[in-house]
Length: 281
Image 1 (cartoon, rainbow, N blue to C red):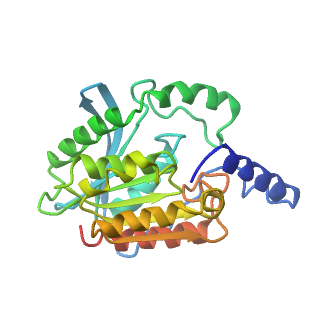
Image 2: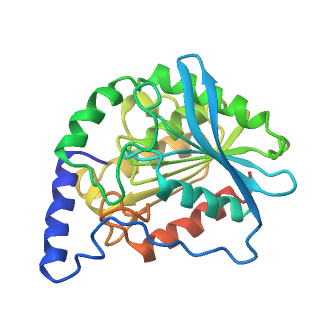
């Protein structure tokens, strides 16, 4: 659902927008997200987590009082940065204890992009070798460590299930997380996730016990229209509820508020569906 061709689509889209005077909207600067109604007071902190492979830097935020279901967030290829902290705060204001990780911790600390920076050739050359370290086994080890960490936090209600969200390359990481800890991970949501219908991931579905939201960019679906059907069939065969939808008019990367192709209307609709998906954790 995500490849170099969809990235080229995005580049052409941005050139068109700029040609019609929409440069500010396409500049990739984070916008302010809506504050939830009855937003909880929250407290956030920068933390580190020991994993079998090293020390992961991350951001943890939760309502200031009480215990709440946990959510583990896997960012897109631009990593943990202010936009994802803003998204974590919004989710915490909605009543969740949110851990957003730097999945590239083996190679670099976060943030490693500057505000407004897109996935340019310089960054592509840097991230490529970092990404090679994120094998299925490595991601599974990380997922287990993150689940163990959130379950040890006083803000987390262990009587409730854990949710996980992932964006772009973080999408498959949600599936690895659900398969790594099926007794705890009861909800998964991916937004413009890449490669979700790969055979290796589909083979893990019987190990999962989650409710799913799969939000697909329109140009990703155009490149791999059969992926959504493969996912629907796999989840249905294993009795896992799954809301799988192509979001019309969206480009790959449309959800983070600092994305160069951010689509606020569709991003907010996807956010509402995320809250509905996690309501039963």
